[in-house]
Length: 320
Image 1 (cartoon, one colour):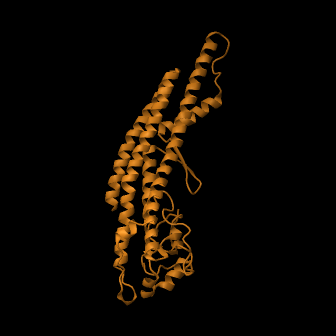
Image 2 (cartoon, rainbow, N blue to C red):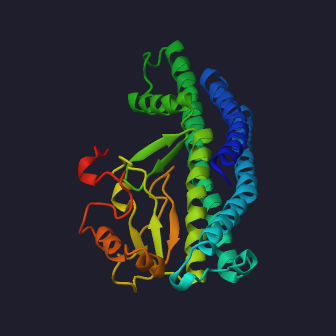
Image 3 (tube, one colour):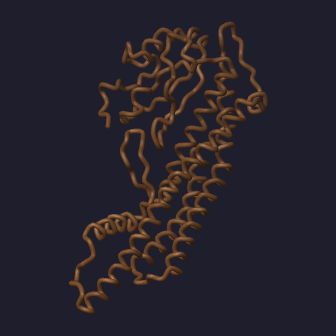
């Protein structure tokens, strides 16, 4: 699946999520402007919100099940074509058949695992969003009840105006500000930073990240099945300090090849990461007389990329 086709699918996903976001925002606005304290009003608002999040989960699940298998299988086909066209020592070519790959248990289990992981990731975010709104509704209703009680007490001369606690008002204000921005989902990244997303942007974030994850898993499984222990990370001279150290390097999947570092972490390195991997064969590196250079480069002994003249050493980049 090329980027153009994938972006079309992303647009369909985010358009559907935009409707969910609109519905949620309408309910939040109802809570903001209402003076209603009846249980029936708030129960209806809560049940409607729960249904919105259920609808979002259904939309995302259907998108994942219709998209990730396509990405996974097309990645395998593309990588097999590269492998089959790769001349090795003696002019021999690989002749792998796509069906012998996707039909085995390793590939099927991995695909199911990728989809389950994507669905679970979205669910966790959606659940946090739902809890935020339920907390906001409960607090808003409580404030309205307290205001009514205070107003009644003031009218009867038993209390002075402004008796509602400042802490309650402050908490409501913080939740209100989040709600007005539509950022109901809090996610802690690998860098430990807590970030807020609206449901539309969060669905795109998960979808794009799992797209790279599906591609990487497909490549790893292809390498294993094809008898290779090496994969190489793509390079585009990124300025991202998270991924830059991995660019262009070759890693040993099992760690048995001591000439290359073990692949502890493969793309995606962070949400929306653009890096990918490809299968590498020892014979090809030896044939091209780049084996030793790639080994030194991957271990950090040299800064110059063995084959890419446009590669900018990390020390010369402004990383952020």
